[in-house]
Image (cartoon, rainbow, N blue to C red):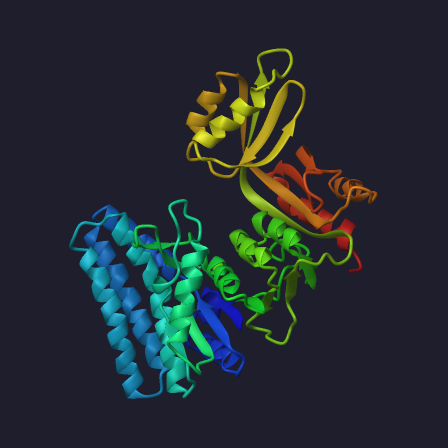
Length: 439
Ligand code: ASP
Ligand code: MG
């Protein structure tokens, strides 16, 4: 069995839905995971914000414009009156439900139900579409098997057992459709895997059924060796190891959600990134195998804040780092990069909602300096300790750019460099010229 996940733009209009329909309708057994149509989850977030603010009229306007958009999609997608009215009834049932939230109290619980609607609708539309075309398929409701535990981690045993049970209800069927992103939590309530979580769904499902391959379909042909939004000449990377892919995904390459590498890696299931606009391109294959050495790609992660704490004592006393880390832990803020010297330690974070509390706690131990608007440049590849010249190549490329922090050697796959956000484009282009010329 194979898992194929299609993102929001891949199902973003009736033509794209038809295209996905074509891509999934061969006879290979598969589970198709869909995101909401692009823009929908953002609209549902906006709807929720209006309801929290009790801005009923704005909420109503937004909801009705969404409802009309979906009517239009359905009218274009379906050929027969039967399927049109069928889909209008489905759309109405979701939007009537959302409209009720505009009259009653709105809590986190209703918000989660609201955010789940996009995937519910996109999967219903796809299932109807395939059925209208005469393609046999079944919709597996993610809320019947996808579950997270008290620590927000996937409950793998529950997922495996319940997914098997759902599938076994349809003997002889080879094509299953399900929702990405949505799940139930430890209390059985509707919840989700956080924004962009459909990739994670695909990987969790792939691991649960021990799929032969997990395919993530978007609108770019795999990982590129640099960011195509800022650098003109980039090229596709054919193969990456799980570790390299995880670093790239975490540090900015938007194509794959960082959490989605782990489940596949744990079960050693290949992940292939594919392009809906160019389905014949092989894309990027991610496996446990390391192919080639040297620097393979660079990526950038924006919105980074650097924090430096200089110990008041002459030397870093033992226990100092532990205290510093405990402060971040107590504010549930994770540290990305770290560099230490004898008297000070520098760290970066990308989540600043507890900044003031963190700084005031840190000030008990030393002088604190905070520098916002930084960017992490992440240089990824297979850089075993004995290989020569990799760090030099990266630094050489950045010789014109002030580098605030460097992290090298923590893994064999990554050199991270912290620079000013405003230097990012120059840095990416310069790295491209130095590292990938002629590739
Ligand atoms: N629809 C959700 C979002 O926009 C999940 C996803 O697309 O992966 O975040
Ligand atoms: Mg996505």
